[in-house]
Length: 475
Image (cartoon, rainbow, N blue to C red):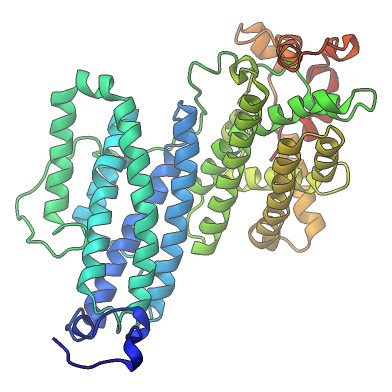
């Protein structure tokens, strides 16, 4: 034990560690970098999996969680890339797979055929293993010499623990489905164990097994599914019978029920993560800043959807009575290229910036004297300003000038065929006007009589086909 005494007993070494801990050998730069690269690879693959499975995952809460957790992973990838770059590592080699067995491990999770297996692979296997490896690094490396790595590992552990906690609850929610296939699922989890053992553990410090391990689901390359899915609480996802924007911009309509329609616009933004996940999953070879920024935007859009959900709860209105469609993400994902989808996204964002866009919604909430809606619209507006910058950085930069970028997105949007009549003819929807029922519910909770003019609102998207470009999404 060190006999050194600091001045008046002040914490020595900036409070990072004791002298005894700081005298431990720890990890060399080479070994530290080797492990950080594997953590980087793990976060990058988890980011990929969360996004690749988001669109086709029907459960709304899981879509939202995958959006957040992909954002966390993207941020930790960025931090690890920066740290490795500080440690005598040009070229960085961060796009090199550190171990074929580790690649197979994540490929198995990516290819998991059901929600319950995906949840187990992510939250009962990969994230706990990653957390344990990060904690081992934190306690093994020298806390003074490698203080920058220790700091980023501490931050990563906070969010890995948060993801673990969410995942444990998610797995519990699927207990019945998991139990019904217990033997089959257990056999697959053993495949994951074997792959990890062959890799020497996630950080590569364990003894490697020499035996080959079988692949259960990843024998064929994973194919991204661009078709959005929704759970049973979305009974009519093709429904385009209510034109929220037509109501909001009608000066004859009072501001108070417009709050209800704005909450509908917010929860309708579920389709933006569904679409943006397709861009990120299908766009390869960009700098990591692209994936980090675009994933942040994707998460913001998921946050906006949850603002709508909270809004309906605050009003005492059952949001499942609102027909939240997926027609925008379905159309873009199945009819356009990834670059064209990004162009449409940017084109729509430009329409949100003028005074008739996000400012108008914020002012409407204020006019209605609804504090929660005003707060949500305030932050929604701020987010969209950020998203416009993301668009300029990663979309507009591909063109000669901003006008060319906007025009290209406009043309891409014009190519999308909205099957309003086709879906009705095929019996997929009747485009039922759900507004009167939801509005009456709101009036009942408020203890007021419905306004007959407001109640009579039924203007559909079909009657405003010329305006579909500005009415079909709230990106």
